[in-house]
Length: 160
Image 1: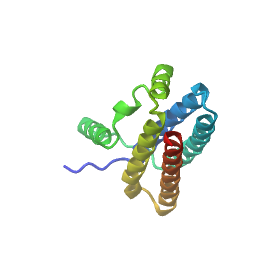
Image 2: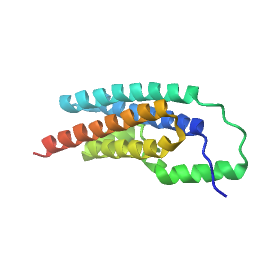
Image 3: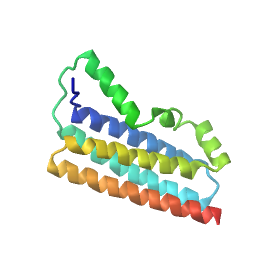
Image 4: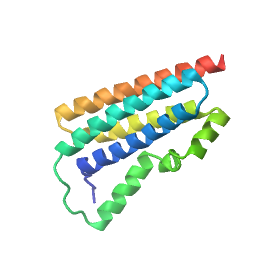
């Protein structure tokens, strides 16, 4: 049986993922002593604020969900878990997680991974949208690509 996902459910999940990334970026900005990292992660946090707002707007314009059979819910959760590895997000907003990432020097790598996850998730979402919402999500995908470029450039600068 083919599963048809609710666009509203996917948009709601996108909002939650954006909030998690936002919390991580804010924590890195708050905890890093490096001024360049602080500026970059403050910028990324503000970008995620905008993305949360955009996805809330999209979500709120989508029709309310109908009741789904339990197998639908289970199948959707399994599918979305395969698209986005929730283990990456398990402790994303804990201070210990952020301190460890900063200490191991992999905060930039984690952020790049989160941005790639966002792009993958957003692309999965596109077929469920009308043309105007699709354009918004495509714009967000381009912004996430720009974030990856900024993060990769910072990583290169710090390595050199």
